Image 1 (tube, rainbow, N blue to C red):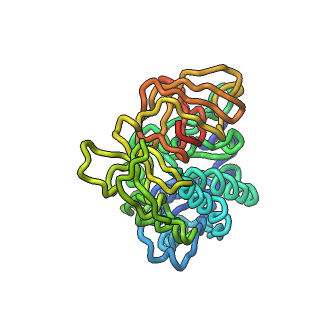
Image 2: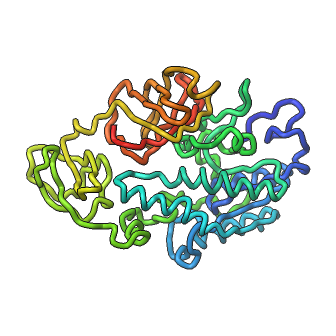
Image 3: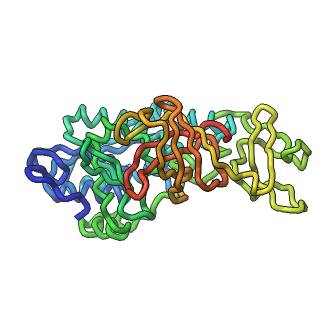
Length: 382
């Protein structure tokens, strides 16, 4: 059963109502995950309303394979609603998405950072504006297809990693606030594998049961970040020099926006004694600074915009032993978390990590637990 077992007197979503009297807005991307959630809840008798966000130009999106809210995906979400017999709405959030997510994405790259727009989209669009829309529709809660768990603890709802570590999306949801967590539900978080989700979709006869997962950022479907930045900020790709740590010129480059911290391939500076990696981006000088892999090792990571979901106030303790994840693809590592203010902190990694980059998230976890304690944004080189 994907949903946590209900407590006495509550339905499977943890609410004191019969399913038929419980309205659930489901955020539907058109993919198999959110489709399975909507179908499952409808089959359990809930009053389901599907909502899909049009996040960027519909006409341009029609030709983009793998884009999460492209025209094809809106069509797929609508077909699921028709199959299961619940209302479905498409909301035009194009301006909000551009202002809240895409513009910052471009500015971050221009500043030499490596942004994670999916987190900002959850924070500023899906769990803010869409959640407000769900309340306007008199919903009792909003459900999504994210792989993460909401569990009740002594102090209220807690955020926990998904049962399937390979599908866990806690890195992208660290900025979920306590207030949002009260209203949100994640029915797929307890599933053991993605195959179970596809089996659910097939069980309900959904055409998306075998639909491939999207691998790219929705507005960068071919993975060419620099091209998107150039489109959003014409003239952004100004050429410059590739230099070593001592400032020796090793080559030239077409623009800082084409590089990220830790990058090794595509530097065009072969013939050196050892492999070189991007260790720093100097935007003001338009320089890509390279060095041996040892120069990527980082132990102290400054973070800001901290969202705290742990017990007590964030700054109540001088330091805490936590596990942290600094990239979505890496497992959590042991660290010491030292608050500097209510929203800033220094993270000291027990073992140095390579490729720590401004613009990435640093997510905190309780040691020996699945609980997500929050996180913050890495904001400058350590």
